[in-house]
Image 1: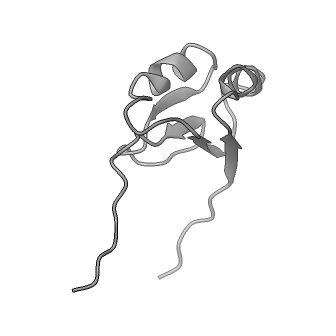
Image 2 (image 1 turned 60 degrees about the vertical axis):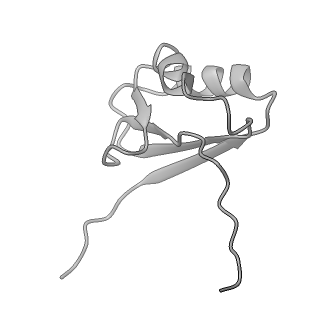
Length: 88
């Protein structure tokens, strides 16, 4: 079957990009007809508070990416330990 169209905005920032990212998200309308996917370069041991920090900065709902991606939301991946591929 045919899949519905999705409008997606992808935003990435380096480790020092939290404040600009908050400003960007703060300027978006609450009824944004798109999903925002966010990547922030931070250590794998940190970042678990990032969805809450961003949620307070935007009229959108910011949450970890384990939830479905929907319009008017900002999806934030939670850092994990890097996976290393090994030969069998």
